[in-house]
Image (tube, rainbow, N blue to C red; front, top):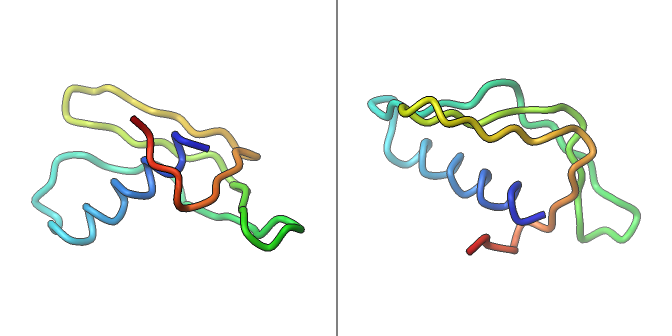
Length: 71
């Protein structure tokens, strides 16, 4: 859950700072609500890549709550 929340924060920063950023996302973020009505899970895998070529992959089925922030 912590990874996906962090990636969603990065996604918001891309929207705020615009296209001049060199980092990028690969794939579409598609999620669905879980039965508890508070958490979600990813339907598709996606990845976040920074200019140093470091890549964070998030597998389909990863759960998240949208509020947990990684250390």
